[in-house]
Structure formats: structure tokens, C-alpha cells
Picture 1 (cartoon, rainbow, N blue to C red):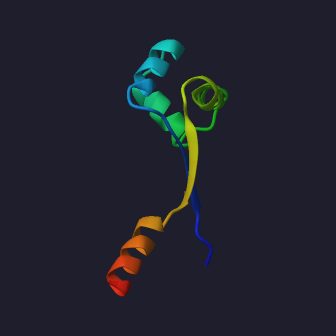
Picture 2: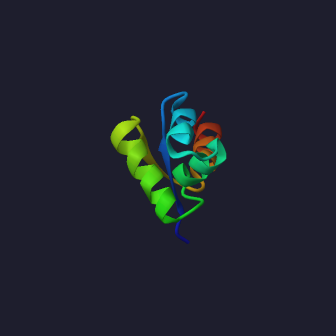
Length: 77
């Protein structure tokens, strides 16, 4: 059984709102693009702009990361 990897782009506080104004879309649209829920040309442009000009960092983690961490803490401590 393989773990599905979740990707997202994390931005500093307040940058999603600035990006929404820049692109003329809603904050929800920006959030959907940054969490890879949508996969369109606009979403790709939003992700590229977030990384290059808004201080975004791409984060990749396993789908079950929180559960594995919780299990590890409970089991070992």
C-alpha cells in the first residue's frame, strides 16, 4: 500500500488576498490552485506566481502524515 502524497504551496500571511487582487479572482480560487484542487492554466499561473513573486514554498507530505506522527508519539512516549 503506497501513501498518496499531498502537495500544496504555502504563502506568508496575507499573500493569498494580494494574489486574489492581482489575478482578479476570489481568495477561494487562489486557495484551490495552491492546494492543487484545480488543475487549469490559470491555476498553474497562480502557482508559478506564488513561488516566484509571493514567497511561496511547495510542501509535499504523505496523506497519512498526521496519523503516523500521532501513532509515533503515543507508541513511543
